[in-house]
Amino acid sequence: MLSRTKHPTRLSRRRLLLTVAAVCALTAFGRSPAAHAADTLNALVWCDHTDPALIKPFEEANNVKVNLKDYEGTGTALSIIEQSQPGDWDVFVVDGVDVPRVVDAGLLAPLPADKMPTSDLFPELVMAGNHVKDGKTYAISEKFGYNTISYNKKNVDPADMQDMAIIWSDKYKGKIAIYDYYLPVMGMVAMGLGKKTADLTEADLPAIKDALFKMKAVSKQVGEVVSSQTAIATGEVDILVGGGEWVTAGLTAEKPELDWVLPKQGGVRWSQSIGVFETSKKKDLAVKFVQYILSPEGQARLATSSCYWAMPANAKAGTKLTDQQKTALRWDDQKDYLARSQLYPVPSADLDAKMQDVWTQFLQK
Image 1 (cartoon, rainbow, N blue to C red):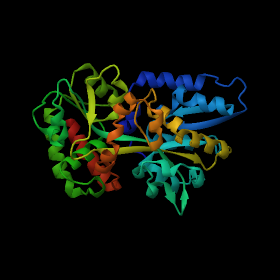
Image 2 (image 1 turned 30 degrees about the vertical axis):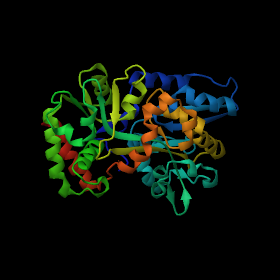
Image 3 (image 1 turned 90 degrees about the vertical axis):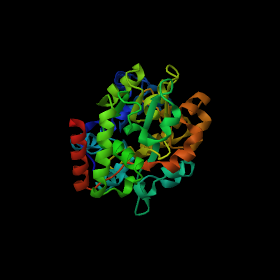
Image 4 (image 1 turned 45 degrees about the vertical axis):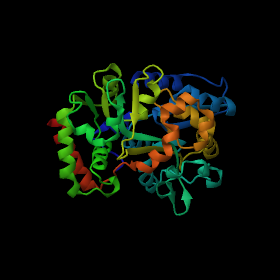
């Protein structure tokens, strides 16, 4: 599905600090990095791309102004595109699981595969099944992370966090917050029950529902990302179900007690991809921008964007990150984490509706 408006927080992980993101977006639109820029580029992006530290080097090197529009949710992006004229947009950042449908809709142009650093990506992020159609590459992964468990290691035994079942036990009753988005959290619960996110059927829902209701009974709150992050940052709760590096990595310098981990059952992996609009009139410049974002330098800046931190898809970005940054991102654990993580569930329309019904019951319980 391209749009799941019933739960609009789907892409809210990229708004860790909403006020910071807003400031970055305003700055990105309002500044004039090149006094007499020879050209402009229009990009429809997630908020991590609005950080001047990421965009300014490209603008200065190419004497160009990059106009950025930050959106949340693929459905919102499609609405923006529908209201735009062909050629208004040049670059598109989109959820990795939505790339096939965006390609089928004819929105993306083929990328010059020989000019993309595909061989430098973590193998699991190549995702040829999502990004390649009829032998042509239409998008490429640029950043990824996990919906898993964030916690306060001063108040929580890290050993307990190795077992997903802890989130529906009563050991930390009243100290748990749950991220309000059904797909990753239900995916996590499914994994905790030994199920695969790619194979979920209606027959799996009763067991998932039972575990969800047990988790709700021991939790203090279910909330969108800002309230959830605030709760764990202020000590109101000690565990955030559905969290991950995107919640805590950027905060570790100020709050070293916050941590995150993939339990033995694994975690749900998300990824974002970048491509060029089919109707762009500046495809060469747009491709150049994609190449910059995928370069080790661009990847390191994107990974540590002021909006939210997450893993760069290009493994060579490690040479541009500090030891502290790599520790916060669990750089040395990625081989294991990638092997033990599973992608977001991508249910059929019928199953998706049933999953949302279960989530609504969970919220109302």
